[in-house]
Length: 136
Image (tube, rainbow, N blue to C red; front, side, top):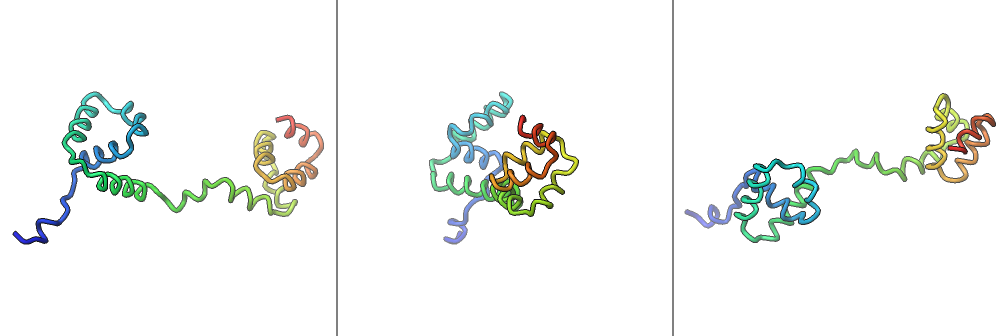
């Protein structure tokens, strides 16, 4: 056997990777344990006990998991960028967005837009609707 064959990393099973991930997460993994059946918890515990004590491998598994579950679309959920962009819209464009919306939806918009944009929007709404939005 060559040295290359000896040093080549072995491919872990899904259970072993799960065990390594759970160990790397530590107490933060508690909600996951609550979702497992008794049989799954026993199998995962046994797999965790069978793991070698390689913290570098644990960190690598955790990083791999993070990268696999990170999506470019996640930026959509960055509320600040969406509302900051909306705050820069002209008043007529804000009104177009607000048109036909329920007062509760408008109240959410007003709460997320910056102060100046919120004021412009509220000032442009019909008075009874603006009052309803402000009361929410």
